[in-house]
Length: 109
Image (cartoon, rainbow, N blue to C red):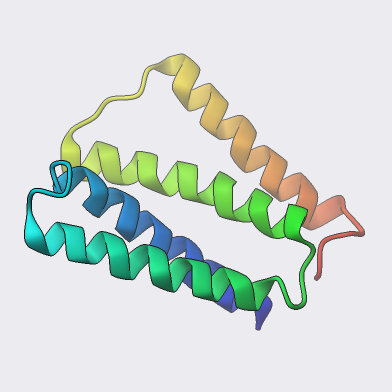
């Protein structure tokens, strides 16, 4: 159940972060509302995750997958184009999350 809540928390955070750009510095109402609701939901779900998962592991997944997903939203929605070093860095982040999940005894499998 922790991984389901973590996945939902990551999705909520990605939506909130994407809406943050669309809010234009909180000058647009509906994207600003999405930011507040998205982050509120994300942190609530993350708090539930931390009941059964170590904070370091949960945060590694949260941050790593959030970075990758926000980058994908930036590419698709905002037309941003990461360069090769950025793509390599993203690949290393994904690799780190995979190593934690597959090889770490600290991760809750």
